[in-house]
Image 1 (tube, rainbow, N blue to C red):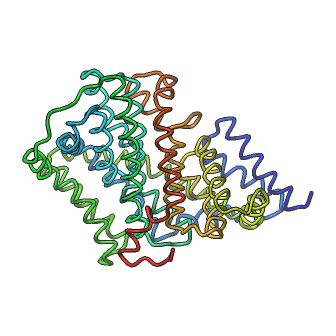
Image 2: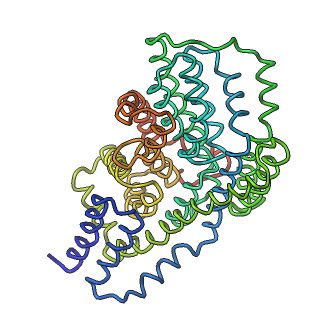
Image 3: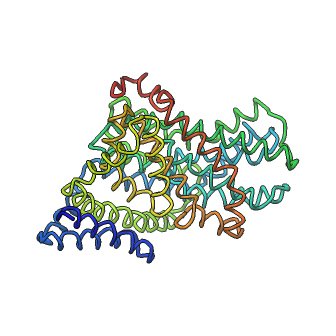
Length: 435
């Protein structure tokens, strides 16, 4: 075995062993990188240098602002408004409350950008509401956790910002635009699955659709939805950067939550900010330690080796695309989203672009794959949150989620093999990277 081969083995095997031993992911990433550097005889000052380099990014400043915006809006009385809006739009259908859950997640995801926040916030309201109306508790929880993944695709998503940084500074605005149709496709596929199950189980319908009622609820939700408009239009229009837009969105969400919807007082604001600091600390530690891991991968030429290994299986671009999805799905089952994006992007993106997949499209594929991973054991964080919020055993939730896994896989395959789903809106606004 060559020196590089042995160093790669030290890096990857030690990392996998620590993952299996349930080490915190940041520790596993950092320690395996240190073992690799020690084996190569490199100075440990490289660790601190790479950690600082990893978080010394202007674009990265948008992440804490988007997290803060999501927490403020999520605890500021927004959930009730968005649920009422979704109910006025789709509550009349068979399985109406399931449809409301899915559509509300699309709206709320555009504010929180977090599947976990979506599940915790909307789930605490909608799961008991669905159970009271005759829906099974495991079905209600399954709908909630799967629809929460829409929030990872619908802008503004801080995971998109992390991917843009990892991919070498691609356009955050184009990534934001690219998420709308895939998010809608995912919502549609979940609604179809919910409708079929609701028909078979004879779940109830809601009240008849009222255009006047919809307009009324749209007006009540205007201030919540305007936050997304400010961010996306501002970035795409070139009026300000993603970082500047996220800072503006924080101020806006603070004013809306405290003075318009009055869901927060100033004491509640401080508690929300404490939650933001906790989340941000986790994200920044992951980014900084993943930077060391990425440095080891790059210096050992792991991206080239991985690309050659995949190409040795098949030269067919469709097979390679399926293998990329499979790799990301497996990673999603054992790791959280941020480290997957940070570690896998430098390895897999060159391979994806070599078979004609646009970097923007690959970003959507990666985020959705990671989202599915959040719902699968053994490290499915959203699965655990949904089980706790719905007070349903995880085994029952997983069983109830099986049909929705199929819906999500279908959406993933359509996004993979029909690039226009991800790229048509960015193309309309002048993106030319995939043409």
